[in-house]
Length: 431
Image 1 (tube, rainbow, N blue to C red):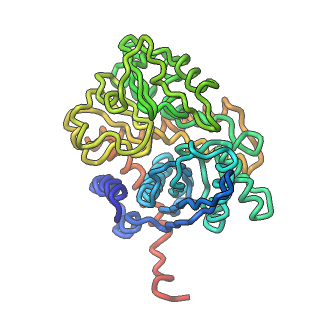
Image 2: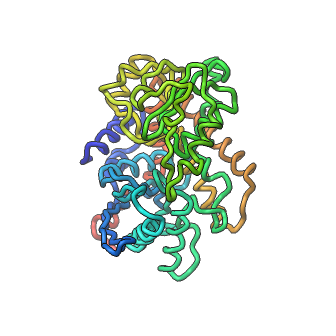
Image 3: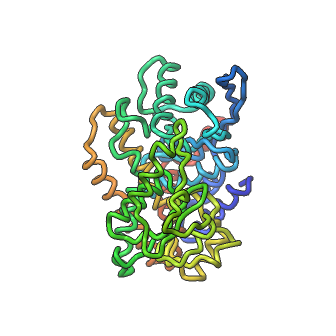
């Protein structure tokens, strides 16, 4: 496994393999991404100049079904990151028993610097470049960091133009009017909420007596904060990319969300407003300070590598629910385990998004669409069921929750790989 982030992700695989009985063939096939694509995307800017952006799409494994994974727009996107995210998606889909493999995509760009029209040209150009690499039975796209339903709609439309037929199932997270599913935009937060609600009774922690800090106040973190606030949890700190606020007595989350999404904070399609602008009556804190607060629950809901060997010993939370992808490094895991902190891993906690993406894909292919109540009910059943499985593995084997989640996923992947065989017939050159 080349690449620092992917190498770190691979250490979780190595740890979990100690507790499984999958074949050596299965283990070897899971160590490397299946296919990686890098593309250049020329975009005509509003001022007439031409800029070329780098884009990526990685399909890590398709043993259990077509690749599935989001597309992120961020200045730090690179092939190592995209491969790592595709790796996590592989195990996430297996852990939730979805008929998918793992994939991911991204473009190296600061989307906040683009106009709406430039953003649309970039999104359509990306699909032009990868159209032969994706498809509803091959690799299905979805939103991720700084992409949303409107961008997904553009991508689906461009793919349909290229293929010359209407193809909603190639992309999930679309607007409702073009085949999107009710509940998709809130699915990641809703899934995390269901996991939290199902796990806390095991620790005798009622919501009213439970304090929460959330790093990341985007779609997932912001909506989860609102769900927890409405359920009676004391959300004492939230932050976005520009900073955060803390109030020991608890924050008024609906007011903060309203400010964040008000016209004062909108520039083009992205929010310029920051939660740290709501400083009156609250203490300003940094993203780093938020992680180290003395709270019951810490929710990293921003980017990867937020809890590392450098700050893990300063974490005071009793438990961590990972809503971001890969927010904790493997070195930090060891420190957190020694401190007795329960870490509910990303491949379980944030799987609500891909689960409802699966529901959307099923609805697109069947032509039958479900109500919001049906979507959330199906999501709750799936999230709670798999969370209980991971919890049981943790207790039975006396291993960390992350390792248990990977064991759960690897067992399913191993079963699928074994069922397909080694494909030596083709490898040996026979026809």
